Length: 387
Image (cartoon, rainbow, N blue to C red; front, side, top):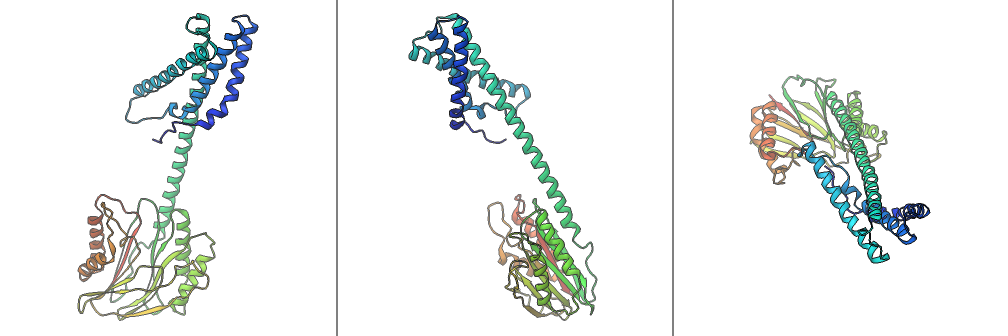
């Protein structure tokens, strides 16, 4: 339920000339009909019109009907009626007092004047109350329609995002590969993909588009298309520049894609990246975990950006972890950060069990850490173990 605005002095002041004009017209009609002497004929309608109309405009949003799921329809009706009658009574007393103080007109002692003033005030209350109620209901309908549209857009973006992901892990001799993604409530732009190179090597892409929704989905589509367009030269730094130029050509303001590309064989890997967290390398020989950090801008952020390629030697039992920033930046219910130190330790313990077991163990660690708090971003993990 949206909060009410209790006071709206600008609207009340804007209503003042109209209220004076209505009161003056009513007073002129009463005087011409000979119902009252000139003073009471003009004073009573003018004061009641200005007090009632301006008063209801002042707190009109507070009086407008707002649905309350905790109350029954009857309870909501009683609440709205009591609120309107109570405020009307306050304004009625105020108008009567002002008539007495400013013009010496005793409204209470004059039954005809009292009836007229009551009807004037009640009519004004009904009209202004109906206006604000209709306005509130129209705004609620507009917000509901807008929320429905955004929900549909997010669902379409999520479907687009997931359709870009490979259905199965690749089968490469000497390598065990596993993928995993946990999507957040609001669709992000995490992406992973693979293809087999001309020499039977495994080629990986892992990325994270900035922003959410359809625009992030467009970046994913662009990155997938550029990645799957095979580059015969095999130079990862050149391929990163090609993808970056392609993303840049979309001309989406403040949108870019953190991306890591890798060519992997059982004997070693070549990696290029921009804007990505470090790749973690578990060494089976001594049980250590090394970080492979490649500092470069995300794809599409800068024109003619420079990228470099890093080579890593691999041995049986080694495991590589590619990931987006969703896991290290995950927060717990107490707002603690998962962080890279906890990530390295969890990966060091899980890597010897194999690629899929490592992914499962890291997701389990993430779930245990965040507790009931939902993730703020997608969590994407890709592990490649040498067997």
